[in-house]
Image (tube, rainbow, N blue to C red):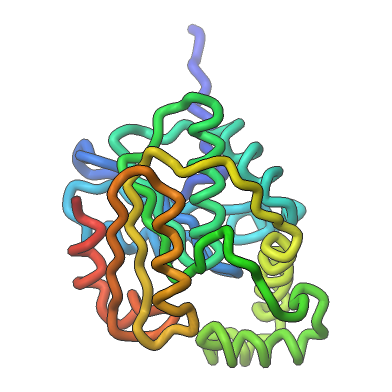
Length: 245
């Protein structure tokens, strides 16, 4: 008797098996050093939506793989193995917003089905100049200080575990290098509705978020929530109301 091998799991997508056929799909690109699990849990707040967390090489279940530090390479590798299931939205938080944006640009360039919405969170519009020192090469102690100062810090249980910290810091370094190595290239606005999210107490300013307007020919909506860079950890219910079409 011939047996059919099981379908190969896509290493880029993490998610819980749906209990009922989903009405739509939300693909979430995590922040620097972030893992898909935090975003997968959003599914309990989004009725009818199958939530996937995008997992880059070098973290989570892919920790043994070399990290990628070139954004074009990340996008091409992702699309070589991934077909987004319509209807779908792309969401990206912080660095993930840039990855989601570049992914949408590449989908458009290839003439592939586009997301119904591109949802970008806590990240300046990609054409704006970036300033500041390179972070990817900082010694561990200085890198941890920067994370505590700018990004809400490393959870105490992680900071107290040297082995866990040793696993986490390389992912941050790789993600910072991904951003530092990237140079924006103009290609015209996308024909995709944009939803721009941010925290009222975040260092990302309203002007930096409003500047996303130039990157879409479709409607652009901006929502500000109470809280800082990780505003959704304080009030996921309000965020879920915006994520629900």
